[in-house]
Length: 236
Ligand code: UDP
Image (tube, rainbow, N blue to C red; front, side, top):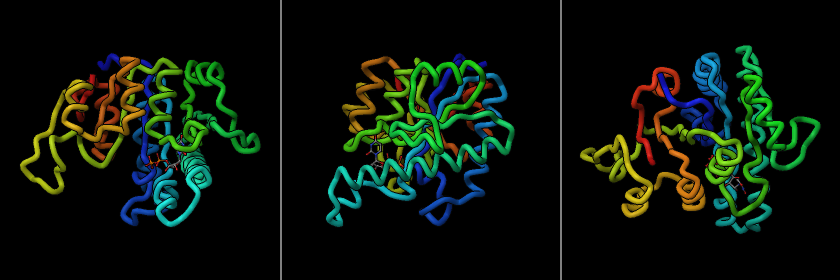
């Protein structure tokens, strides 16, 4: 059995893009939704923060001459598209959900209200937090750490394309070593890119463990959350 009761799962936008590497691959979205549904049915409280990099990433637009704050606002809107796609896929699997946005858009989602989010979670709804922190110059990793702290999540799960944290890039270096556990300080000293610095320090300051794992691995989310298996790398 896992010791987690309430978790915050961070999904980067690129996970939803599939082979194309851009936009939404609906088959991929459905696959991820099935994994989340399996874990949600076991009685765990699940909150999601979804990125937008598969559609728009502010910093990349700045390289092309866009204003940073404007580009970041566009990036935050991209996360809302992903959140609505995930909501649809989850509800088709009969998982009750609510989307809460950090930027008000009441016609399509609730605004972020912490106490209301907690009440949804207690009622077994999957809460999807969209529009990041609502402020430019931040990332959805930071939004994940922030929301995790606000809702009192037991951990931040970072679902990625790789199966954990390595001492160097496992794609470039086949001999790279994977950590099953690592401390916040060691990850910092080794400059391992677990999350961006703001996100990482929020987790560290608030003692929120981070698990980096392969979201595509068959049943990984359930193994991690329901069966309590060691999947990925745990940062504490
Ligand atoms: N963003 C922002 N503030 C936030 C979160 C996100 O301005 O609090 C913008 C930023 O431009 C970012 C984009 O939204 O590039 C998409 O988020 P992110 O890059 O974190 O998505 P991911 O890489 O996880 O798909």
